[in-house]
Amino acid sequence: MEHCLPPGLCILTITKASGFIFWNYLTETLWTGFTLVNHTLYKTFQSIILEDERNYYSTLELPNNLKISNLAMGDLRNNTFIIAYQVDEFTWKVYSEDLPRFFDDNGYNNRNVNTTNPLINSKIPLSTISINVTYNFPIIISTNNISIYQDDSGGKPILRQSIPGNAPTSFVYSADNRSFILNVLESTFNQPNGNYYIVIDDNAVKDFKTDQPLMGIQTHTWKFNTTDDYQEEVVFAVRSILTFQSRFALTTERKKNFESLLPFNKKSYLLQLRIDLSNSIPVDINRLDAIICCEYDRSQRPPRILLSLPIKSTTKLNERNVDRVIKDLDLLIKNKKVTPISWFYTTNFIEASFGFQLTRNVFQDFKFHLIGIAIGIIILVSLYFYARKRSPTGKNTAIFKFSLIFLDFVLDFLFVLNDGAKVPQLFIPSIAFCAIPLAINFIMSIVMILREIKKNKDFYEWFKQNTNMASLFTILASTDIGVLNILSSNVAGIALFNAPISKGTQSLIFLVSHIGFFIEDIPQFIIQLMR
Image (cartoon, rainbow, N blue to C red):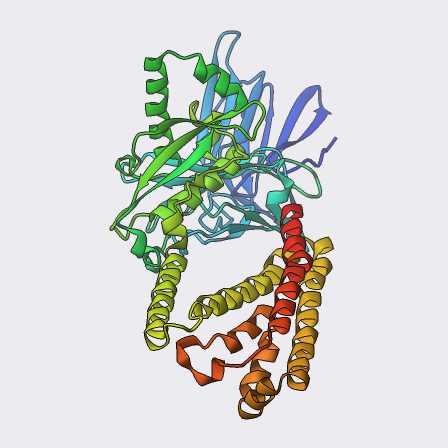
C-alpha cells in the first residue's frame, strides 16, 4: 500500500513474501530528492538515494548486519539523514549521514523561498515600511510570528517588531498568492547604518493547497543593513541645541498600583522605565533625562497619570534627532502589541491610546508667527508716530484700524478654508456667514457713497478729484464697512484721506458695523464651538 504524503513525510509499503515481512520507506528529503530504505527483520538494512525524478543516484553506506525491530528516520535542516533504531529493550542507536544537495536555497536555507525584498546583504532606506517574501508556490499566512531584529554593536539582538499571523491587516498577498507584503512600522528600521535580520518562524506560512505548515527562515540568515544617508536627520538640525519634553500616560490598571507604591519603589519603577524606554526605541540612555512624575489628565474618568520624559538633542549624524525619537516612540506605544513596549514589564503599562505627545512650547511652535507679529507691530507703531508727527490732529489710529480690518478678513477666509472644510455639514454655513456679510457691506458701501455724492456737495467735490481712491475703498469696505471712515481720518495729513463725510453717514457706518458683528462674527464663533 502506498501513501502519497506531503514533502518530508514517509511513504510506506508493506508486503509479504515467503513468510518474511519487508518494510520499504520512501522519504522525500529537503535538499536531495528521495531516500529509499529497504530491509527485512533478518537481512541487511539498505538505503539508496534517488534524484528528484526518483532516478537512482547512489547508495548510503550503512553498517552491515543491522537487525532492527523498530526504527525512526528523517532528515535534518542541515541535510543530515538520520536513522534511530532499537537494538534491544533498553538501547537505541542513531546513525547519521550527510546527503548531497540537488536544490538551490538562494541563501535562505529554505528551498521553498524564491526571493525577498530586501535581498540578503542589501541596503535599505531608513524608515522602510514594508518587506516582501516570494515563495515557489502559492502560500497563505499561518499563526506563528515574523520577527525583525536589530544587531547592536555588542552582538546582542534587539527585537524591533514581531507580527503574528493573526494580524491580517499587516499582510497583502500577490495575485498568484506566491508572495506577501508585510507592512512594518516606520520606527522599525530607524538606526542609520544598522544591522538587521528577519526571522520567519516555522508554521508562520502554510502551503496554500495542502494547508501544511512550512518551515521558516532562521536567525541571521535573511540579514541586511540600513543606509548611512543622514540627510533626513539634518533637516531638523536647527533644533539640535534644545531639550524637548514629551508626555505619556499609564494605564488605569497601573495607575492604581503605582499610587499605592512607597516613594522608594516609585523611584525605582521610574528608573527602570527610563532604561526600558531607551532599549525600546533604541536610543542612548544618556539622551533621556529622569522621568518627571506626575500630572493628571482630568479629561478622563478616572483621571490618568501623565509622566514627562525630557529628551536631549544630539549633534551626531548617526543618531536619531529629537523629532524622530518622539515620532518613533509615539508609533511604538500606539502599536505596543507588536513592539518592544509590550515586552518589558514597565513599558507594558503605558497607555497605547495616548501615545507619546510633545509638550506644547508656545514659542517653539509659533516662533515664526510671533516674530512676524512683532515685526508687524514695530512697523505699525513706527508709521503711527510718523503720521502723528506730520498731522497731530489727524485720526492716525486709522493705521491700526485698517491693519486689524485686513487681518480680520484674512482670518475669515482661513476660517472657511480650514475650519469649515473639516466638518462637511458646517462647510456651507461657514461660506454663508462669510459671503452674506461681504455682500451686505459691499451694497451698503455703494449706497453710502452715492448718498454722499447726491446730498453732500463738499464730498462730491472731493470725489471728483479722488475717484480711484473712493472706488478702491468702496470695494475694501465689503470686508468691513468701517473702512469708509478712513477716508475722512486725515491720517498723516494726506489729502486723499480728508473726505468730508457727513455725520449721518458716519452714524450709518457705525450701525452697519454692529449689525455685521451679529451676522458674521457670532455665527462663526458658534461654528467653532460645534467643530
